[in-house]
Image (cartoon, rainbow, N blue to C red):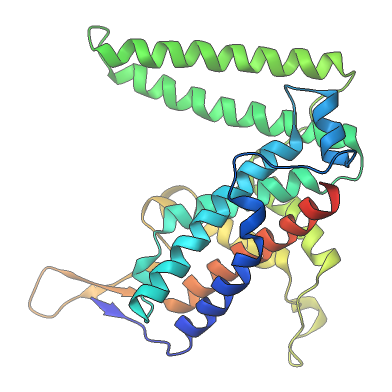
Length: 276
């Protein structure tokens, strides 16, 4: 196994780890602790079913725990291998941070509710697909069949409850077409509030943007590529005289992905502070 070396990688991740812990006091508890009278507290008063702030908070905790685990790994080993980052978990952490920012970004309470309903419905649809696939291969005599059946009914009830609550509020969920659109919305926000510095030799038509980078990671970690842990692992040619493949880990891809997760998380945390 070949691991690409970068002597500065551990140092950069240690810096991120220290900055990350400035948010620790806000994220260690299960209760978001929104300030009385704040926009997110008022959202919670309006609806006990749709709570954009609470949902965003849980997504941020998930991302925090991932970044924290990477920081602990680096500190413990004093070195860094890109193979230490499990790609599927990295993508999940990035998606969670994007969902949090997506929920917190609107100034308008109604828009936060509409986005919250859309995400909740999409998450339930995804879970229902997983349950359907499981029931297709599990025999009815298997005790777990009832577990999946009960879960399916709960998800359907959850969907009905969300739609009823949105109707009560006089709203309709936004139309959200998958994770790609979610990432695009988040990227446009980041490009607006904290645009990336542009290298001197980059033409305006080839500008560096969060949209380009974020969509790159989304495309490269979806579907078949996602299942085979690209871009964190790259399969090289067969080793001479054997039928084994040499695996090369590209640390630049890993650092890029972790940096992107941090940027989204950091901006979402800033919004949480402003609104809650």
